[in-house]
Image (cartoon, rainbow, N blue to C red; front, side):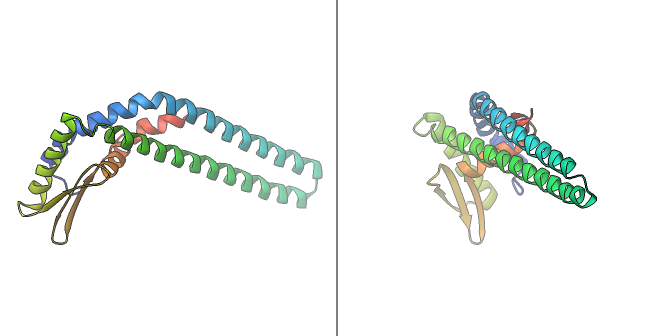
Length: 174
């Protein structure tokens, strides 16, 4: 969120609080699924690594050991890539859940007040002549010439999840 004033950051506190509350409400379910999925990936990776090591020991030659070490490294790398890909998928799913939760507030008075607040923030950041339009995904987008301020729900949700990265990482820690 580079470029936002302290006032803008403070003004976003209600959104952060709402997004954080929505994320926490769904975190238990996501955490359970994430833990199960990560455990399955870790188990498969460990099993694959053990198979590679057992195969290398059975071959018993220096060449086989070198090949086994290469396969073991490859298996560890593949397992790590699978884990990282799964973690990224879980992070994206969490952002999507936060977006849906925030978008679910549409039609409520507090959503309208929040959009009005975002509109004021755009004008404060970009100037009174800035054009501020509703984002189809919720929130607003302000523009003044070549300057643009995206305060849409997906951008703010991603920023909120990133701001709580330490807590989010706990979702897939064993």
